[in-house]
View 1: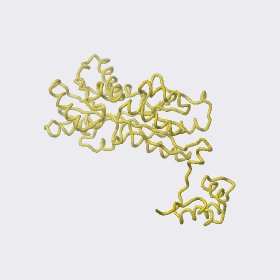
View 2: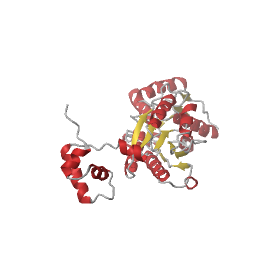
View 3: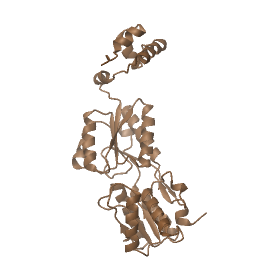
View 4: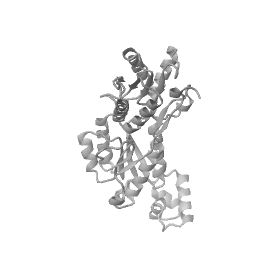
Length: 340
């Protein structure tokens, strides 16, 4: 086995002391630019990678922020994490990512594992946790941010929007445009909490107009999928054949319903209107283009990272708002309004 390259080896190659090498990698002001260049060049030539573990132990800084997301294949969460990562990098921080698969018990385990590694801050998706998970967050003694939601009683800080209100606004807009026989796909006891909130927003909007809000199809999986949308759409058509507009808890469900209609010869929007949630990249390119809600996922990520930076910089708690509300936008397109 080849002997590992050490800091001493780099020091000998660069003609400096090991302490100077350590300071160069930490960008200490006491090391001038030319010396640092020589040290980094020597390290590259030798294939040396600086081990920051000992330094972190001394400074009590790990340089990472823990982030949990419910899905790895959802482009909304990918956009959020990308924005968090890009913004944190400007502050010398990196995200350490955990995947919960929409399971609060799995989230609890991740929170415990993360806290053992002493992150600078921790970000969780959503405002619903197990009792123990919430206790761990409350006692973490680091900045805690719940994103993609506006919980009524946040653990510490929140960055996001009300999913219920966003779906209410979309449904209300469609009713005002003349859509009255509406059905909803998504939510239910096995769904993620944001899908449940969207379902509740649909019910409130439809009921507020004095219309039938009972045409609901619960999904049987925590993950949004086109396959599940096909099954749910068949159930909707069987139970509620009068439905003329289908609103879905996710664009993935809406894509599934749209493809099922195309297979069945159902013309959209002439025979049936469809709306989703999420403004996925493909939404403006489907035929017809898809009505949806743009939740501004990159904005959520950027505001989350900015909040972390402010808190770690020592801004007074009373100067930092608890709830940071982000924007969403209704995108009314061809799938509910006809070809334009």
